[in-house]
Length: 440
Image (cartoon, rainbow, N blue to C red; front, top):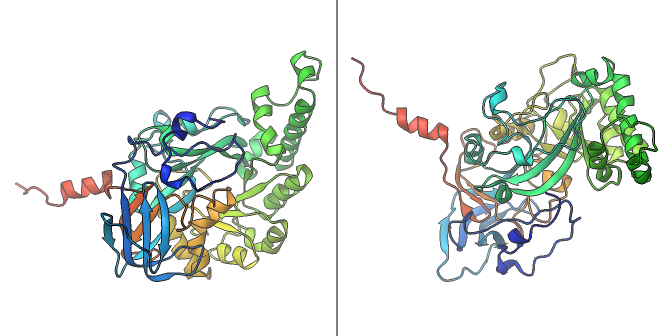
């Protein structure tokens, strides 16, 4: 999936002809809004709510106007076309759909069950591996996340060293092509306790192995013809992996490095400087200790605020991590799922993570941005996702109240302009057993 898909491009909505975006063609796939995905072409007006665009100030008694798959207007005095479907949001809060930048939705159903896992491959170097064709659009865990207002996700691979490539997907669609909107999004690497096996038990050897692979990828690019004629020394990774690393070395594809301890984070920053890489830190449990250093490096962090249980991998974990990083000028995206194992089952917890971050000092506006616009910005998707603006994809949630309050629920969820039923396997089980049969 490395080029524009003409058959999907032909399904784009004519109403957004004035919307343009410019990206590297190998990174972006066309957004599919074919009739098989959407219920029908329609105009929807969400009226009277407290509209929080994220990209601007909240709008009291605001309106969000959706046509087909796109937002076409946001404001306090939006003209509503005749025949539009109206949704009364008085007393409600309207936000962009939440984006979780660390999930394995569609890749795993049963934890630790290899028969239901498509998260990775054997071996510690798998740069050419992409998760996208392993995604199951019918996963029972996707509706569970949607019910909690999660409309888009980064779907990431698992691995103990160079795990492979992630994709960005909307959580709607019957096929992979209909879900995935960008592939690849990032290369994922681990530099922590779990990656020591890639260096025969040593962090230093693991780091040097990463350097050697990157140097060999550069050498391969400079001498492809010699490589094909077998006139080069043996390189430290297979050809497919060396090819997959070329966009990373060229700065077109970011490298997400999972690192928690201070010295692991510094190692990640050191490699980024040496090879001029676009690095994104994941986890960074002890990032608060060197927050200013991370901020000066201009490196964003994918952080899990509900993570303070110490281990040898992150002895200094604390709840204030997100707040301290943000105060130092670090762009953060709040995620849930666990960078130790990556999971689909806790993707829905992202609003709880954000609420906890607020309770430990993160400004509310920063927290909301960290689950909407910031992840879109970090991965170069802000022109289409993460805010309520004309020309953005219509991923919108109407909440019963403050989305970070535990008692608040999503009352309407729209993905690409289509309202998603608020049902999942969990809600169906609830209804099935709400009234228990009499005991004899």
